[in-house]
Image 1: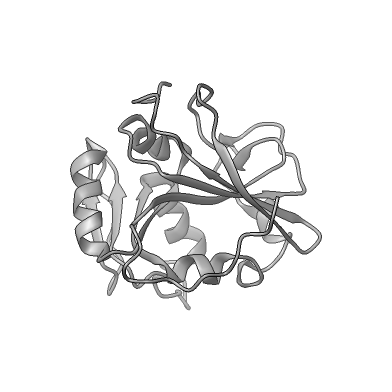
Image 2 (image 1 turned 45 degrees about the vertical axis):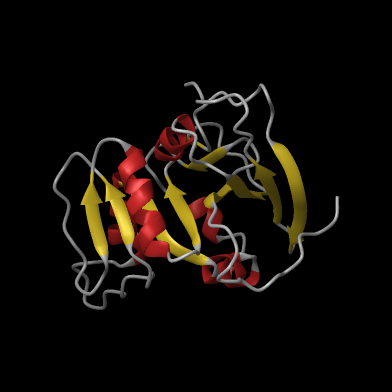
Length: 204
């Protein structure tokens, strides 16, 4: 399998809805309590495909668990030295609860059907790609609606035994199509898959 080429983003290319994430060797994106400590020891995201990937992203969506993890650990809101919101792109946060906003961040809090949100994201992205940040069940809802185009997962060199699954859906007939494999340092291999739409809506 050839390494995926680094092609600069073009405004004329078709928008893709992508699940870009990291997972343990045994298929978990976080521990049961949403911890990512296992991941941080493995390397700097800036030394992976992340800078190239985020340059092509025009809108993001994430679940409430991912958002709250960012508030606690990425931004450290309430601490003496909080960090700024890391994304310039508009971000849709799916939650059935009221969540605190982040000053200066372009956030839209939503719930329910992912399809109208996907349409709004496409409009905001202006031809760039849509990033489904996580978690896995939210990504599964986009898959169920036939809206997931591509999965990019960086497999780290640890096992967790249990935790939050990469994608809690059965995607078997037809299988995903592997399009690229890349190695980053001593701890990561990135697998890139196209998601077939021939079988219609997915299942749990």
